[in-house]
Image (cartoon, rainbow, N blue to C red; front, top):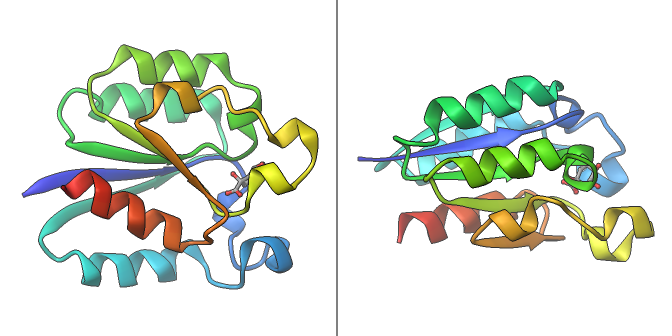
Length: 139
Ligand SMILES: O=C1C[C@@](O)(C(=O)O)C[C@@H](O)[C@@H]1O
């Protein structure tokens, strides 16, 4: 069975309550239940932290044994060289996901330090982006 981790960064614990006009009204925990049902043949794991170091520790922990990871680093995408370095340091392939279309928003969201360390990036497709990323990593 393939093992895939979904890694969510800062403020994504508030999905469903946080700026619903931008990020929708469903909590990630709810969505994750649907995902697990859709992909009953994959071992899906989920980890969220508001702390950069905790996200880096998680990448180190799973980064040599899991088959894939899906990372939405939230605001850290636009600032964290350390997270980008962590992704370069491991062998597990990553796909970057953003719920909103970061290119249609403020200019400071247009650049992500982690994009170049990922297989690809999905943005602007809402929570659906996570499902598409799982499908890609499962292929
Ligand atoms: O926290 C987030 C969420 C986000 O990563 C997204 O999923 O659309 C986009 C980021 O710019 C923002 O800081």
